[in-house]
Length: 254
Ligand code: G
Ligand code: G
Ligand code: NA
Ligand code: MN
Image (cartoon, rainbow, N blue to C red):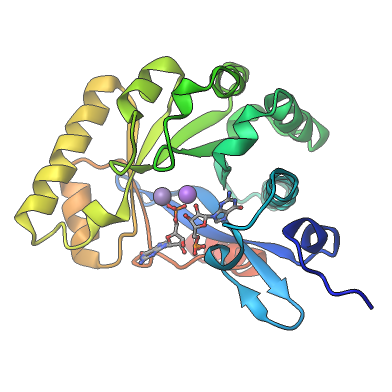
């Protein structure tokens, strides 16, 4: 038998599994969504994290990964809807190279339509840490099409990138995800606190919401809630988990 070696082949074999990490409202404690994080259940190497396979991927691998995550995420929403479990949106990570594909937005909107889910149920996480997405006309067009259709756009790893403020202005970014590097020890470290407060003030002025990622302790969570952060995500709430465990998490909180 041939050895599976690319992410595209892994997708075909059903080896790409979405893990779901909850996002929580600081005000109500309600689940506001789940971020999907890819895992490769490799037959001989065990469970691979994205760090082990993301870097060597071709454009076609990227699109296969996105389609696999999208399909699992949208089917999860269908299941949760049918079970009466309220999950407003799921977030998927995309790579910036996908945004150069003229068909990207149409393909995403087709998948939503095919699953009979409205566009706001999907959040697209875009990264600025790898380069300014706003310099690419096709990327701008794709993001604008998605936002106009009602998809939500998250700016991931906020604070570590290049043209984040420009991106917020150019297409409707709904939410910034404050990078974990600013969140760690924010309850006790003065310089972390000032960063968080500055970013929260920025988000408020721009009328977009802020989610702090990588929240690991109750103390960090308490500080963020007190400072008016809208949402949190991190080990303090739950680790990324397979679909069944995520469903269990929702049932316990319902
Ligand atoms: O869980 P963690 O090790 O899973 O993820 C590490 C990194 O991999 C994160 O920065 C995340 O954005 C990225 N990542 C996780 N899943 C995906 C995915 O499906 N597509 C892309 N492009 N990146 C992902
Ligand atoms: O780049 P992105 O923000 O998508 O990365 C998410 C990454 O952070 C994933 O690897 C995920 O497993 C990891 N992660 C999620 N919550 C926490 C946390 O509380 N602490 C740490 N150290 N990593 C986290
Ligand atoms: Na992300
Ligand atoms: Mn991030």
